Image (cartoon, rainbow, N blue to C red; front, side):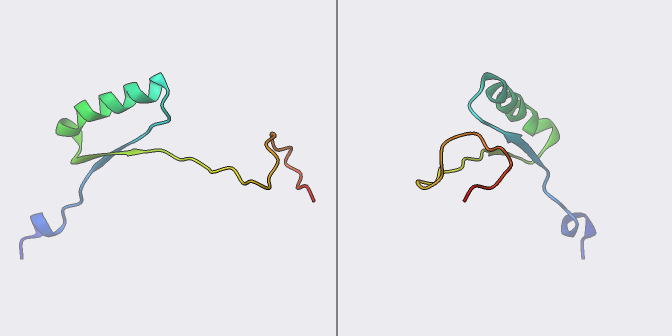
Length: 65
């Protein structure tokens, strides 16, 4: 058994992108670094769909009834 190939772990460069100029710059830099430092690039973003029954105001940390 070849241990060099069986213990290979792909290296990801992970970048969070939110559409801001800074995150786009980070994504571009990461894309240039992949050939040098990683095996693949993973761009991630998160979005929360607002609930129709929830008020659209900042949370005070106290639950409302």
